[in-house]
View: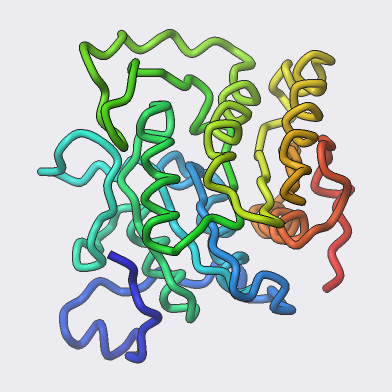
Amino acid sequence: MIARPPRRTAAAEARQGRPAVPRDPLPGYTPRGALRGRRALLMGGLADGGPGRAVAAALAKEGAAVALADTTGLPGLPPGAQPVPRQRLGDDPVLLAAGLVSALGAWSLAIHCDPASAAQGRAAVAHTALEFGAVDLLVVHGGAAGAVRDEGRMGGPGVAVGAAAPAPRTRRGARLTGALRVAREARPFLGEGAAAVLLVRRSEPEVSAAPLRAELRTLAGAMHGRRARLNCLIPRAADTDAGIAAAVAELAAGGGRSGEVVGVAQVAHPR
């Protein structure tokens, strides 16, 4: 299911009737190979028009293999999280982002996944670990995990046992809670020296709540045993996708202190 970095040019793809790869969202980005050999999973931020495509491009340019998990909306797919073959490339944001990652010379993996489903989130992490061998970097877009549902006891990756509980109402300020839950459940798959970055909007009331900041630090402390890092990035309305992507890449490469909530402007960019 992994898409090999292409040897063909975009023009050659177009001549054969294949969809064109989307333009590079970071044409002025100067990589330094900080994530060479790392294996990343980007959860959310694609289907809702978030900064996911720019983040994926930054990770790929820094040398990471990138799995992209979000709701694809493709017809004919059975329920549950699952990798989508590269041949299904169309105008879907998830598959277009995967095509972009491949065009930038990195390995890519597109995963159809409802990020609001706890079961499918776990399955997406498991699929990434199975295809890439491990997960070294997890990026969770808080908007995707804002109303995490738990379908009950698991009978295998992405399979719920019994009737699924009705989807809860999305309460205001649930973004950080959902993103933390995704990171917590992904923890068993994160290897030595891994990093997790949670993207949450500053407008969310929970970002400034002391109990949740304490929960973030507690989870970061639990991950420290494997030298794994956890940070929460809170973009402002004025921050560009390019700035957010550069900040995520820097945190993924070890910038800043683990367990901190930081703004884009607080992350140093050695570019």
